[in-house]
Image 1 (cartoon, rainbow, N blue to C red):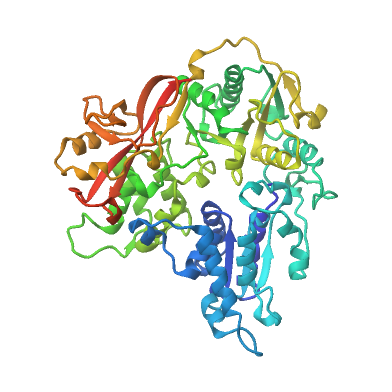
Image 2 (cartoon, rainbow, N blue to C red; image 1 turned 90 degrees about the horizontal axis):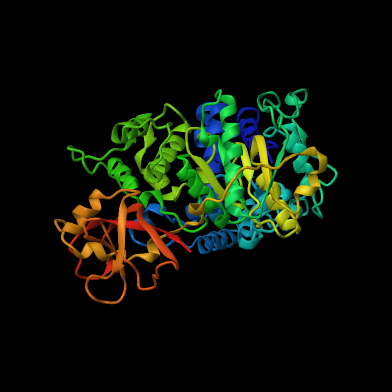
Length: 610
């Protein structure tokens, strides 16, 4: 972690462009998610300038969609669901068919599909599954007889960070890479991210994992920082931990644990700002299970600490929200007086539009979740090839591809809220300050859990705090021995409001077409227009006398019909609020009788006491 894997890819591409005079369109980089692809593009542009624009940088899904002619935007606008596994397999099938040439080599069709591609670079190779492996092999031409027909292939990965076995990812693919491609292995053993203390403690934890590729290659701090204090800048700033990894010995009550955890994070936040709380976007709380994060989210709200809880279930895609619809309307020129639509947007147009539309700086603290996601999309988009014009059609496709944007959360957003997430969600992110909750979630001591805890630890740049429940049953903390500082907070009492839980609806929980059966001038549409995230709502039985539930605004206007499968969470309902506002276009699948072509919907969230 933090060993410069992305830097290796970026500099390899720069070397190909500048030293080997390879054409940009002959190079492709595959990243593990959209945010990682954007980071590669941003770094590459900073290193080589406009030449970076011709290099293809995309995800494996993006590659498969390109090879099969599939479009996010077209699929969404038609109401179709993209089955990515099937798209990847179809892309592989087409490439395999194109290999069937003659004695002279593969067919012309392969050259046409790959459009002159000669160099392929793959990030996070340890996380690929069988379908990914087959697609990469087909692109690289692994089974082709002639080396001239095969692509030059470079992959980077870390078997210590293989944490997605549940989704089919297998570490065996990176372990057999040398055999598959007669390749050479190079070890990246310098950490450019974390302090010496964090690196040493992380090494202790991962050293006990079996069958590691780097068993004899211990990670160390990078050469440029070798003479700095092991605790980094917090060796002087923090009078308590002095930059050491800090273990909080906490009771087995999760409510008390999160109170102690937030108190420690608040203390750290005030160190740099002379006692005044600074930028919460530099902080993250990581847990094994997202259920353990709910009390922390509740406590943050009680103390007015800006926070965002990243749930593991579906979150609304940005393009489906009210804010995303506003941006799509802008890009499509739906309100332009002139008949022609935009082809290009000038540099910084989107950030200026955001500030005028919402009265907020694009890089400031945005509490509204959908607007924060929109701000991240714009910042991410404009960080690649800054001060250049944007192709509108590419922006629209990117918006649909962006999804909910959670993969981008956490990097270079100091003015954002503190992020709460599971260890699986934290992969690929980094923060100045990380706190890992215990909550009883780290109960297994196997290698897969060990790698997951190692990933959580190595998200930290400057300060790492770990909670351990009384009794010392944590399977990994004891491996760090005397390297850590231990303390036992006291003086906290139970806060009953931390027992509250929140159930959040996703689109499958509501009848998406229901508001469309009312005319645009109907009260339901006016009521929906008045609602926003956080607005109070009422949960009640259907007003038409039939079985089921509906959501109404405070004036009693029904605004959402809940699906038949919905049942209220068990316990005492404390309140109902708007979680998100969506926009939907009429679709053929909605059936007959629609009286509106576009309408808004609300996704409710229900706070309750189990």
